[in-house]
Amino acid sequence: MADDTPPALLFIVVGTTLRAEEGDRPLAYYLKDRIENALTERGPLDPVWRVCVIADVRWLHEEALQGRPTISLGGPGVNMVAHQWFSELPDSLIVDQRIFVQMDPELTDLRASVWGMDNADTQVAVEVFVRRFLPRFLDQCIEHATELPDYDPHPDDADDEDEA
Image 1: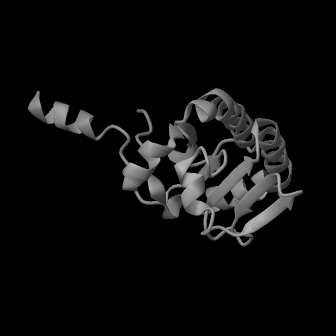
Image 2: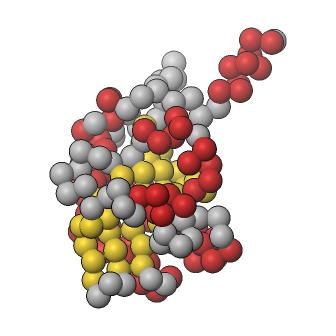
C-alpha cells in the first residue's frame, strides 16, 4: 500500500518580469537542485520533501502556500515577494550593498530572500546562501515539518472523484 502522506513543501519564488524569467528562474532551478541534493544526502525523511519553483503572483494570491518554508529569489525590483519582505525580514548578510540575504537569524520564521543588484550578484548571493545558510534553514524546515498546516496541491481532484 502506498504512503498517502502528502509531501512537505518548500517554495522558491521568482518574479514574473521578463528580466526575472530570463535570469532568476534558471537560477531558481539551480537552487532547487542544490536543495534536493542536500535533502537526499540526509537520507530518508518523513515526511518526504518536495521543492517547487513558483511565480511570485501565484504565491502571493494563494494564502495556503504562504505558511510553507519559502525562499524568494531575485530583488525587490523584479520579485513582488522580495519587495514585500524587504522591510519585514532582517538582513543576515550584505556585501558591498550588492549582495543580500535576508532572513530571521533564529530561523523561527522560515522565509529567506536572496538577491543581488544584478543577475551576476544574485548568482553570488545564491552560492553564499547555499554554503552559509541552507544547512541550518533545512534543519529548521525538517524539524518543524509536522507543524506545517495541511495543503492539498490538487483540490479540484477531490471534486472530480465525488462526481464519478
